[in-house]
Image (cartoon, rainbow, N blue to C red; front, side, top):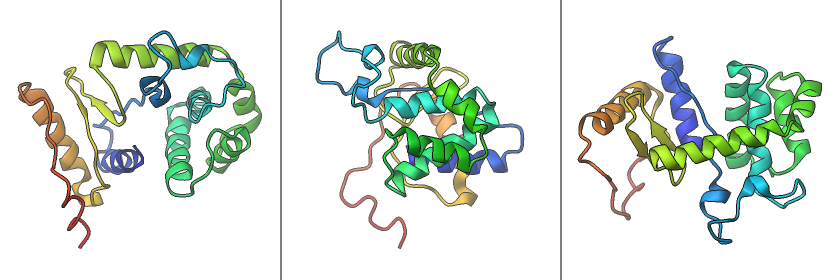
Amino acid sequence: MYNAAVWLASAQSQASDTLEINWRSFSLEQANNKEGPDWKIWDQPSDYPSRGFLALRAGEAARLQGESAFNKFHLALLKARHEDRQKIADTEVLVNIAASVGLDIERFKQDLQDESLITKIKEDHIEAVEQHGVFGTPTFVFQDGASAFLKLLKPPDQDAPRLLEILAEVMGKWNYIGEIKRPQPPWPKGVYE
């Protein structure tokens, strides 16, 4: 997910205003739960020891300060989790991330408690599963409705826009392609050599 976010941020910065990215919430904890089909992460009590649901709420709280605020927070959140190995289930960590990207902290803390954010996350998740077949992240849903799950290493910045363009074309134009998978090993051997 982090590699995809960095890639998309690079592609977007190079595409001027022609590339619109709309991040949506998807709970891997819900998708991979072992409790059965009736168990829902969004129905758990606030003290439920979730690994990621509070971070989803924090993302939506950041979004209430604008898409630009959300984008900065989202990238910083993923960096904190994947590079810095911070515990993003910790409110203090989330507040520090919000502060580091210039969010209004008092508003962020207040919005983080807003129960309507849970409904937004639930709706995003259900739509992703039911309308687009999402099972994991990152999954891309293109303007034409085509969707693709993609596992990748971060491409070089100069390749970022073109790779996204190619992915959208392949998944949108040739709907008979269901899955492309590079056998392992050797991948990622040779990628950075």
